[in-house]
Image 1 (tube, rainbow, N blue to C red):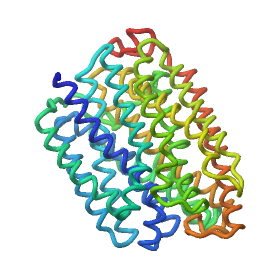
Image 2 (image 1 turned 180 degrees about the horizontal axis):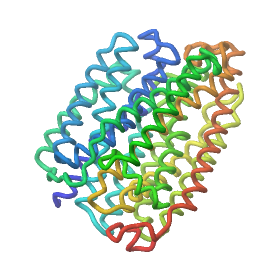
Image 3 (image 1 turned 30 degrees about the vertical axis):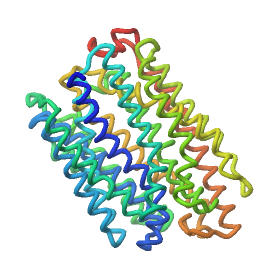
Length: 476
């Protein structure tokens, strides 16, 4: 087998591991809550600490990779992720777990920032479409298989093993990468930007904290208003710094291409709707329907299987079908999926989610593969690191803000009746409130995905793709 396919395998293994830790945790959250006596806000932060670290560090990691070498940074990211996984598994209180998850996210950001760049430097033309199809299948499989893997490990062993399992995988990935990856860099175009990093991190942290704590402190309280104001000021300063500095974190000129903007909107839309929804669907299956973690993971299996097979099909179709059509189709199916699941009642069983899971699996598969390709095919090869970093930032910002915003809506409906939806045994009144809140955020998620579908169809244009991209050559 040619070395480039070994490179693809190495990258996909690492990406599978880091993405698995986004969804594998969801099934274990009730067990974590009981073991560590965590609050609903703590559970949100267990996921959001990881997503925020990914979102805020991925661009800086991309710049460091361009300057010092993508192979070096990729391997260092795998090492950081593996060590942090061990710390997560050993956590004895929520704060330690949240901090360890943040460090995990930093390692994941480094792997994410270099992944698409490593693939794009090895594959061109039609083969790039195939490679991105397999990459998309990896994303779909990791995101969807996570609940099943988490259920098996949590039920058979302990929630701690959802983290410990990363240790042998990480060690193997390091050894494999040392032997197969080819070093590459682009120091002339690397952009180290500490001002951008600080302002962006501060802005996103304040925004997510305000969304998570808004119901508890009151949306008009001084703390929450102050956090929103700090977020707005910090993010505004970030944009100003990017426009004024010669060595900025983000090349704002990339956003002049509508197709590039469409790719970021697509990434944000699917992450803030469908992927963020997995947390609340998991809580419904375990706390309302009283399924075990393993039983919950099995219920997600239809979504897993369908998305796994849909992603490579979408990758192959990207050489024949306009990529904006694939993105529109994928996001539209995600919207339909959440709409189908939104009719839950107190008498519903898990089969009420089945149609939505199947449709959503197709939608995830048909979104991820063309999205990965679009993210780097609208820029020159030497800008692939920044382009992939920006796209992965929008993915993780979508997850972090989606979980926080949907959680704010959910908690406002549930109130104290369900204790935030984390208790293992809920009263009938609490179940009714929980289901009402879940139905409401499912509709909100469907609207977000539908808006993203329309914008992807409008913005992603053939003329914005560079000649080395498969879409440009094949008529995207």
